[in-house]
Image 1: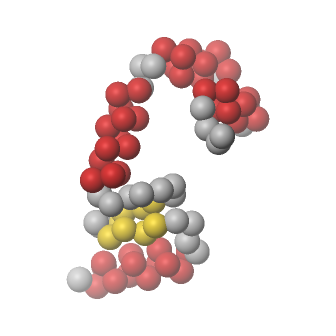
Image 2: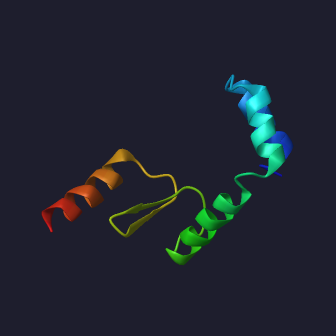
Image 3: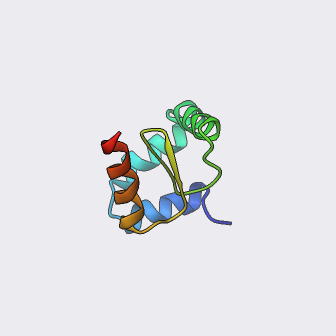
Length: 79
C-alpha cells in the first residue's frame, strides 16, 4: 500500500525535513480537516486520481508532459 503514516514519515526523512516537526504535525491530526476538505473539493471538480490539475477550471488528469499544460494555458489566455 502506498501512503499511510509510516510511508509519509519515511518520505519526510528522505527529504531531510525536520522530523520532529513533521511527526508532530502528522500525529496530531491538526491538518486532517483541511486534507479532507481538499479531497472533497477535488472530487467535486472531477478529479478522480493523483495527479489531477485544474487550470482555470479545465481538468488535466494524470501525469502529463509540459506541452499539455502549455496548450491548455495558451488556450485559456486566448479567451
